[in-house]
View 1 (cartoon, rainbow, N blue to C red):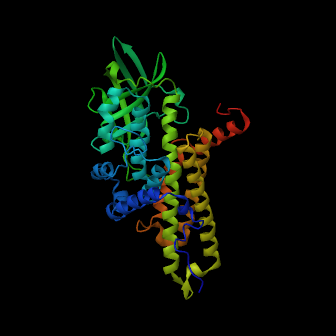
View 2 (view 1 turned 180 degrees about the vertical axis):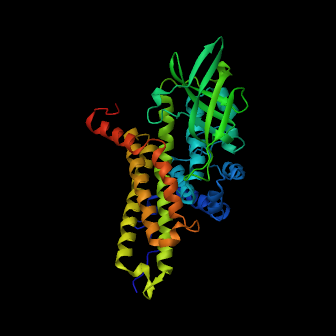
Amino acid sequence: MASVMKDPLDLLDVSSLLSEEERDIQRTVRDFLDDRVRPHIGEWFEDGRFPRELVPELGKMGLLGMHLEGYGCAGTNAVSYGLACLELEGVDSGLRSFVSVQGSLSMYSIWRWGSEEQKQEWLPRLAAGEAIGCFGLTEPDFGSNPSGMRTRAVRDGADWILDGSKMWITNGGIADVATVWAQTEDGIRGFLVPRGTPGFTTSDIKHKLSLRASVTSELAFDNVRLPASAQLPEARGLGGPLACLNEARFGILFGAVGAARDSLQAALSYADARIQFDKPISAFQLTQKKLADMAVSLNSSMLLALHLGRLKDDHRIRPEQVSVGKLNNVREAIAIARECRTILGGSGISLEYSPLRHANNLESVRTYEGTDEVHTLTIGQALTGHPAYR
């Protein structure tokens, strides 16, 4: 019998392109998740529960805002952050979403656009998992077109009065502080709104078919009075929130590879153990074609993610390149998860196996941080010079 590769999922030996430190970080995150999360994730998904009790542990491991410098953050390189996202999403997209929103949206918005006082107040607590953050940009009627947002902040003496609502906000119902973007007389500006501020309420979105082990909420602002110190002083215009979204999209393009990898691992294991017509189904040509096609797609996606990670670490990555990664890797991950379900047969609809759960979660991942259509047009504009959004 022909020998099987040591790691059949790493067909192209991509791991050899990683530094020892990067491999150690990836291995540490994987071991933690295998011990603390993987045995329970199916139950949490079924119950629609986010394991909030894990947040301080994530902070202790340095996973929250891990690619940021100072203020209690780990200060790792971009590739290490990406590999952590890969392992997190390899267990469940909801967990990676939490870490992405905490670090790349909430914390990054403060780290990049906040005052020194805001950074000192919030970043160490968010990095330690002692506080939770969320990011309020999307509105019920303005998703792909955030420039049309209706949430508004108007000056009242030295204060601001904030009115409006935000929708589909990960972590919203459990957040201690929300970064909220609003129209002002000076254009779009960002504000930090702590939980408990009068007029600020949240309501969780129930009956989800996707990202069930994650908190998704609506934020409402009714005559919310904020001091001048609540404004993020360095953020002006739509470029502020869009820069934050690019940080989160980078984590997604690695994370999607994790979901695809976990799905393929489940399919490979099942195909080797499932006997039909007196031999394992992995020995049939049609099954091997499925597995081979998915392995090629998985390894190509991983190479793309790693290349973009190196560009980011060299400070050379461009927004359209992030769009290529997010568009391709999420699209390929969904296709892999769905194909893996076919190998699992009827067993594939059970929460005992991960592929259909990953496929459901990835439907949300495909939509948030830019839909396929938006990323396609971003790439199209880079190719032609013509914006086709309107």
